[in-house]
Structures are given as C-alpha cells and as structure tokens.
Figure 1 (spheres, helix red, strand yellow):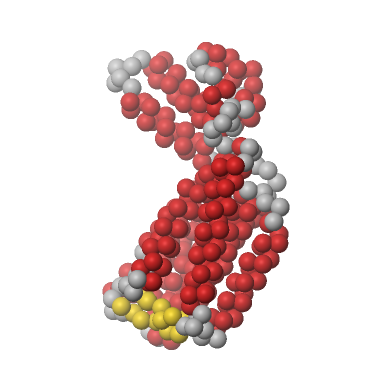
Figure 2 (cartoon, rainbow, N blue to C red):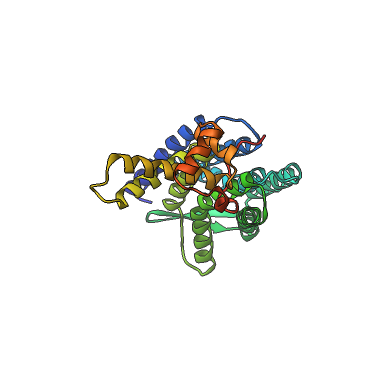
Length: 308
C-alpha cells in the first residue's frame, strides 16, 4: 500500500472514530436496550481506532500495522454479536440473557482461533484495499458474522411484523432501517469474496455504521420523532401554495405533528399527548378542530423506546 492510500484511509477511519466517540458520549443509559447500544458503540469505536492506527503505523512498521488490522478483524466478531444482542434487547426478548452469554462465548472462541492463525493467515495490500488471506476456519468465522447479521434482521422483522406492542414495533422498525446499509455491505463483500473477487469495505462500512449509530442514538433518546416530524413539516410546507396564509401554514405544521404522534403511538391518544407535551384534553380538542380520526392510526406506527 502506498503512502497516499494509507494516509487517506487512516484519516477517513480517524474521522469516523471521532464521530462515533461523540455519539457514544451522548448515550444516556436508561435501560437494557441503551446498555446494549453502548456495547455496539464501543465495538464500532474500537474498529475505527484499530483501523486508523493500522494504516498510520503501517507506514513506519508493517508488523505494527498488521497488528492493528488483526485487532480490527477480531472486533468484527464482537460487533455483529453485539448487534444481535441489541436486537433482542429492543424486542424485550425473554431469551436475552441466555443468547447474550452464548453469542459472546462463541465470539471468544473465534478470537482464540484467530490468535492461533486459524481464521486469517495474512494480508495483502492491494492499492487502496486490504485483503485478508483466509485461514482454515475463515469461512466458519465469516459464517458466524453472517449468522449474527441475518439473525438480527430476522428477529427484528419478526417482532416488527407480529407484535401488538407499539413500543417494540417501533424499536424494531427503526433498527431495521438503520441496519439495512450495514447488512447490504456485509452481504456484498462476502458475496464478492465467494465469487473470487478482491472486495473490501474500508470506505463503505464506516459510513454505514456511523449512520446506524446516529439513527439509533436519536431513537433511544426520543429525538428521532422530532427530527422526522420537522422534516415532514418542511416537506408539507413546500407542497403548499406559496401564497398560503400564515394561519394555514401553522395549521398544516400542527396537523403533521399530531398525525405523526398518533402514528408513532398506534392511535393511543394519551401517549400521543405525552409525546407532544400536551394535556389529553387539549389534544382531543385539536383532533376535533383539525378533523383527525385517531382510530385510523390504530394499526400503524410504533412508540418511543422507554420501557426498562
């Protein structure tokens, strides 16, 4: 790998490290889900720390650079394991404790195998990419990563589709949307490797994981609702007649806010009123004023993550 490539990729990873660290320090640990989210943040921060240190030190010492890349590879086991644990926490699964112990135990076993050279036998630095040389257990280790990814998505989708609990439904819906870029990249890279191509995710994966962490931070802090509402209000205003009176614009903004709150709470007016910071009686009056039927939201949306 030439110096320009190492400096560019190292700088990119360093920026991702700083941004993810900032997200980590803004997480308020309130319940099991936020605890699991902190572990996911830590694993992503470790990944980017190992990545930028690997690229920068590689310029001075190949051995030291490869050491940090080994750390990065090992961190993948815990990253995807923590994503599965997070999916269980978001759905309030009764299997949370047992699966967490099992999945992290398997990650530890793979770490031992990795340290003994059974997973990765070496690296090739090709232009702007670092390609792993598979060891005897490489595909077993990658199978573990893919299992965690697929299990996370499947678990979230099942509970989003089948649950009657609006909170769990919203938790799973947001996590699915946030995880989709990561899963797409993981599948693409492994698929290309299986097909014989030298594929890497040194640029795409840090971006996808940063988006995931930011979306989940907004969700766990309860701010995703307000961001989504603001964006939809702006869109609604842009679609209106440019000569619309100020009163009509305010009415449209408030209608969007109320509809989004009802959608998020499955039409539960008391919960929607709490989310909007209104007394239930005031919300009821505004429903009548704006001719909004709360019943139509009974089977859509979700709820803000608050359960312990």
